[in-house]
Length: 188
Image (cartoon, rainbow, N blue to C red; front, side):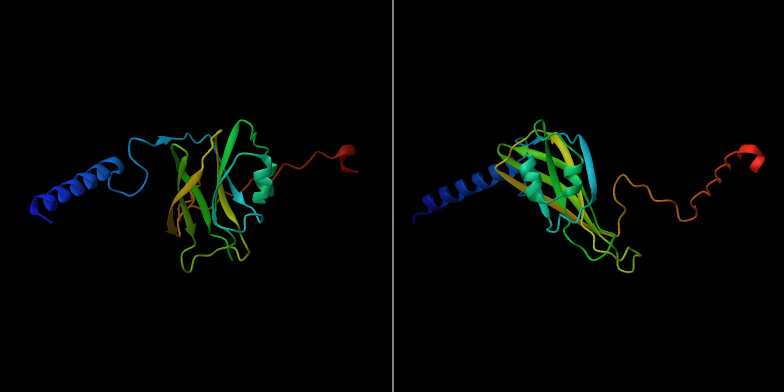
Protein backbone atom coordinates (compact mmCIF):
# COMPACT_ATOMS: atom_id res chain seq x y z
CA UNK A 1 0.00 0.00 0.00
CA UNK A 2 1.31 3.43 -0.79
CA UNK A 3 1.87 5.88 2.01
CA UNK A 4 -0.80 8.19 0.56
CA UNK A 5 -3.51 5.47 0.78
CA UNK A 6 -2.36 4.49 4.28
CA UNK A 7 -2.49 8.13 5.37
CA UNK A 8 -5.95 8.56 3.83
CA UNK A 9 -7.29 5.43 5.60
CA UNK A 10 -5.82 6.58 8.92
CA UNK A 11 -7.44 9.99 8.46
CA UNK A 12 -10.80 8.38 7.67
CA UNK A 13 -10.59 6.15 10.76
CA UNK A 14 -9.72 9.12 13.00
CA UNK A 15 -12.63 11.10 11.55
CA UNK A 16 -15.04 8.17 12.13
CA UNK A 17 -13.83 7.70 15.70
CA UNK A 18 -14.12 11.42 16.43
CA UNK A 19 -17.64 11.55 14.98
CA UNK A 20 -18.68 8.50 17.04
CA UNK A 21 -17.26 9.98 20.25
CA UNK A 22 -19.01 13.32 19.62
CA UNK A 23 -22.28 11.57 18.89
CA UNK A 24 -22.40 9.45 22.03
CA UNK A 25 -20.13 11.41 24.33
CA UNK A 26 -17.54 8.64 24.20
CA UNK A 27 -19.45 6.70 26.85
CA UNK A 28 -20.70 3.82 24.78
CA UNK A 29 -24.20 4.53 26.15
CA UNK A 30 -27.10 6.16 24.39
CA UNK A 31 -26.22 8.85 21.91
CA UNK A 32 -26.24 12.35 23.38
CA UNK A 33 -28.65 14.63 21.61
CA UNK A 34 -30.78 11.81 20.21
CA UNK A 35 -32.31 10.49 23.42
CA UNK A 36 -35.44 11.98 24.88
CA UNK A 37 -36.17 11.79 28.62
CA UNK A 38 -39.37 9.93 29.46
CA UNK A 39 -41.13 11.59 32.40
CA UNK A 40 -41.68 9.29 35.39
CA UNK A 41 -45.21 9.88 36.67
CA UNK A 42 -45.14 7.61 39.73
CA UNK A 43 -43.05 4.98 41.56
CA UNK A 44 -44.74 1.75 42.65
CA UNK A 45 -42.22 -0.21 44.66
CA UNK A 46 -42.59 -3.20 46.87
CA UNK A 47 -41.96 -6.88 47.45
CA UNK A 48 -43.68 -9.39 45.17
CA UNK A 49 -43.08 -13.15 45.23
CA UNK A 50 -44.18 -13.31 41.59
CA UNK A 51 -41.04 -11.44 40.50
CA UNK A 52 -38.52 -14.25 40.98
CA UNK A 53 -36.16 -13.27 38.15
CA UNK A 54 -34.06 -10.10 38.14
CA UNK A 55 -34.38 -7.75 35.19
CA UNK A 56 -36.04 -4.77 33.56
CA UNK A 57 -39.38 -5.22 31.80
CA UNK A 58 -41.63 -2.87 29.82
CA UNK A 59 -45.31 -3.68 30.41
CA UNK A 60 -47.99 -2.34 28.06
CA UNK A 61 -50.97 -4.61 28.61
CA UNK A 62 -52.83 -6.60 31.22
CA UNK A 63 -51.71 -9.80 29.44
CA UNK A 64 -48.04 -8.76 29.72
CA UNK A 65 -48.53 -7.90 33.40
CA UNK A 66 -50.20 -11.27 34.01
CA UNK A 67 -47.29 -13.03 32.25
CA UNK A 68 -44.80 -11.11 34.43
CA UNK A 69 -46.48 -12.72 37.45
CA UNK A 70 -46.71 -9.66 39.71
CA UNK A 71 -49.86 -9.91 41.80
CA UNK A 72 -48.85 -6.73 43.64
CA UNK A 73 -48.72 -4.69 40.41
CA UNK A 74 -51.95 -6.24 39.12
CA UNK A 75 -53.65 -5.11 42.36
CA UNK A 76 -52.49 -1.50 41.79
CA UNK A 77 -54.88 -1.28 38.79
CA UNK A 78 -52.71 0.88 36.52
CA UNK A 79 -54.60 1.92 33.36
CA UNK A 80 -52.40 0.12 30.81
CA UNK A 81 -54.46 1.55 27.93
CA UNK A 82 -53.10 5.02 28.77
CA UNK A 83 -49.88 4.24 30.64
CA UNK A 84 -46.95 1.83 30.58
CA UNK A 85 -45.08 0.27 33.48
CA UNK A 86 -41.34 -0.22 33.57
CA UNK A 87 -40.40 -2.79 36.20
CA UNK A 88 -36.92 -3.24 37.75
CA UNK A 89 -36.80 -6.43 39.81
CA UNK A 90 -33.90 -7.72 41.92
CA UNK A 91 -35.33 -11.25 41.78
CA UNK A 92 -35.56 -13.72 44.64
CA UNK A 93 -33.18 -12.96 47.53
CA UNK A 94 -32.56 -14.81 50.79
CA UNK A 95 -33.04 -11.81 53.11
CA UNK A 96 -34.29 -8.27 53.43
CA UNK A 97 -32.12 -5.23 52.75
CA UNK A 98 -32.52 -5.42 48.96
CA UNK A 99 -34.25 -2.68 47.02
CA UNK A 100 -34.53 -1.31 43.50
CA UNK A 101 -35.07 2.25 42.27
CA UNK A 102 -35.50 3.49 38.70
CA UNK A 103 -33.71 6.83 38.42
CA UNK A 104 -34.45 7.67 34.79
CA UNK A 105 -35.82 6.53 31.46
CA UNK A 106 -34.57 7.68 28.06
CA UNK A 107 -35.96 6.95 24.61
CA UNK A 108 -33.96 6.77 21.38
CA UNK A 109 -36.20 5.78 18.49
CA UNK A 110 -37.45 2.28 19.27
CA UNK A 111 -34.86 1.77 22.05
CA UNK A 112 -35.58 2.42 25.69
CA UNK A 113 -32.74 3.02 28.17
CA UNK A 114 -33.64 2.45 31.83
CA UNK A 115 -31.30 3.80 34.51
CA UNK A 116 -31.61 2.51 38.04
CA UNK A 117 -30.00 1.36 41.26
CA UNK A 118 -30.15 -2.06 42.90
CA UNK A 119 -29.01 -2.33 46.52
CA UNK A 120 -27.98 -5.35 48.56
CA UNK A 121 -27.45 -5.31 52.32
CA UNK A 122 -23.97 -4.58 53.65
CA UNK A 123 -22.06 -7.40 55.29
CA UNK A 124 -23.20 -7.62 58.91
CA UNK A 125 -26.27 -5.44 58.29
CA UNK A 126 -29.30 -6.53 60.31
CA UNK A 127 -32.04 -7.59 57.90
CA UNK A 128 -35.15 -9.71 57.93
CA UNK A 129 -34.47 -13.40 57.52
CA UNK A 130 -37.05 -14.10 54.85
CA UNK A 131 -37.16 -14.66 51.11
CA UNK A 132 -37.74 -11.27 49.44
CA UNK A 133 -38.47 -10.09 45.89
CA UNK A 134 -37.87 -6.32 45.88
CA UNK A 135 -38.84 -4.25 42.86
CA UNK A 136 -39.51 -0.74 41.66
CA UNK A 137 -41.98 0.01 38.90
CA UNK A 138 -42.50 3.39 37.32
CA UNK A 139 -45.58 4.63 35.55
CA UNK A 140 -44.92 6.53 32.30
CA UNK A 141 -47.16 7.76 29.52
CA UNK A 142 -47.87 4.99 27.01
CA UNK A 143 -44.63 4.06 25.23
CA UNK A 144 -43.47 1.24 23.01
CA UNK A 145 -39.95 0.03 22.37
CA UNK A 146 -38.39 -2.76 20.33
CA UNK A 147 -35.57 -3.14 22.87
CA UNK A 148 -35.02 -2.24 26.51
CA UNK A 149 -31.45 -1.49 27.60
CA UNK A 150 -30.91 -1.63 31.39
CA UNK A 151 -28.23 0.69 32.81
CA UNK A 152 -28.31 -0.44 36.43
CA UNK A 153 -25.87 0.59 39.15
CA UNK A 154 -25.22 -1.70 42.11
CA UNK A 155 -24.87 -0.37 45.67
CA UNK A 156 -24.42 -1.97 49.08
CA UNK A 157 -25.94 -1.00 52.43
CA UNK A 158 -27.72 2.15 51.23
CA UNK A 159 -31.12 3.52 52.21
CA UNK A 160 -33.75 3.40 49.48
CA UNK A 161 -34.42 6.84 47.94
CA UNK A 162 -37.48 8.50 49.37
CA UNK A 163 -37.06 6.75 52.73
CA UNK A 164 -35.39 8.98 55.31
CA UNK A 165 -33.75 7.01 58.13
CA UNK A 166 -34.01 8.27 61.70
CA UNK A 167 -30.79 9.79 63.01
CA UNK A 168 -28.85 7.33 65.18
CA UNK A 169 -29.42 9.41 68.33
CA UNK A 170 -33.16 9.72 67.78
CA UNK A 171 -35.64 7.10 68.85
CA UNK A 172 -39.19 6.62 67.66
CA UNK A 173 -41.42 8.96 69.69
CA UNK A 174 -43.52 7.20 72.31
CA UNK A 175 -47.14 6.96 71.28
CA UNK A 176 -49.75 8.45 73.56
CA UNK A 177 -52.15 5.82 74.84
CA UNK A 178 -55.60 6.14 73.30
CA UNK A 179 -58.11 7.68 75.72
CA UNK A 180 -60.39 5.14 77.29
CA UNK A 181 -63.89 5.01 75.89
CA UNK A 182 -66.46 6.36 78.33
CA UNK A 183 -68.31 3.64 80.14
CA UNK A 184 -72.05 3.53 80.00
CA UNK A 185 -74.05 3.54 83.23
CA UNK A 186 -71.10 4.70 85.26
CA UNK A 187 -69.15 1.55 84.47
CA UNK A 188 -71.65 -0.81 86.03
